[in-house]
Image 1 (cartoon, rainbow, N blue to C red):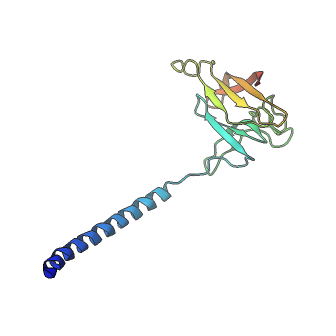
Image 2: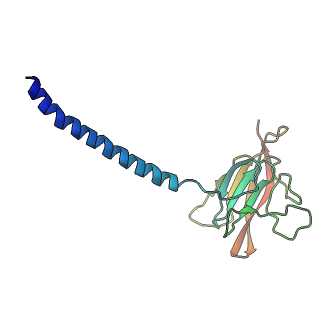
Length: 170
């Protein structure tokens, strides 16, 4: 009787070991592929980034604790940077709202996670788009509401955000 059990158990153990080794090999292959497709650095020079949006012209705008709400200038050879002067008087685009950078427009002192809202998505870049940005500065309980303006730019039209109002939260 013991010989019959051993005869049945040997092929079962071999099949089980074969299945386990195949599963291990496949899981390692998938894990290696997942690691290869990991995250990549999109922008650098930020202090404490709290979120980002993609505008209708496919440009990234980031909310940063120190810089405010700014457009990212893409780079062909590495991560992008904030599209705004880092020193007073520099001859570059001024895209930041609020924050601590020189010559920034009115906006949140410490920009929080922005929310992009398009009331009429069927009419792309119609000018009714806006972004809500909470101000995380300690004396503030404001939410900054921006409206888009469309003007001529280096790639057709450029979206600029203006700050027409600050909403107090209670």
